[in-house]
Image (tube, rainbow, N blue to C red; front, side, top):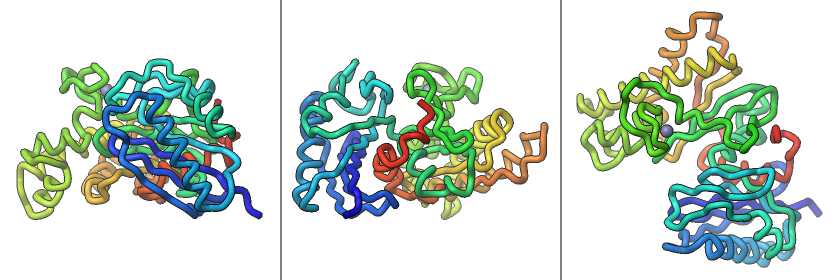
Length: 302
Ligand SMILES: [Zn+2]
């Protein structure tokens, strides 16, 4: 019988969970709303219940669990240090140990954007590109850096925060506190604000229909995203710069101008071999990455 792995993608509004196999097929999935106002123990207990319920459906237990969490996560220790999108404080929460104890299986935890990168590494374009950077575009801008087939994590598992590069001197203050981060200029909410629309989705449709202010907002976002991508190409010379996000249209509108910026701004070596394209793993990249944590842990540069 093939080995089953459990995967959980914790978000501010929903918790997605799945059981899958070593080839990245998600066999059973379930999504519940994130319990509103819940403290860390309650959220972790909800994750445990989800995994139990999926196990009951499959008729057997998975061998291990991988979890993606949006925040500062120490993958070595399984501790969660900061989760900006959940209502209660997660300071030094031993989430890995808690889940290992309640589910009685090995548990690995990783930041959600790094998890999406890891999913791409194993089950997306990863096999084509030994080194790549991935931008996750949405409410925030996250990402990950893969060097020679392994996900770079750094001493705090925090390497790859490519949305928090300074790209504009004296730019808007970012959620992280620094002025001029890419996220403060090119995230979905930043684009919507600049375009004068309630969300990035309506701003994108307006831009497509010829609304000048919306087009300008996307142009600005793409310009800065292009600077960030070009900086990474110059620093790392990856095989590819990949983009993913909940909103496909947002990625489509930004891809062409980012390509142009990279070819314009990378002057130190010919960069036309660097692919700039949409990631392949799609909306399930986070779950696939969580699944991959226990399938190919040696690809984590811990
Ligand atoms: Zn920032």
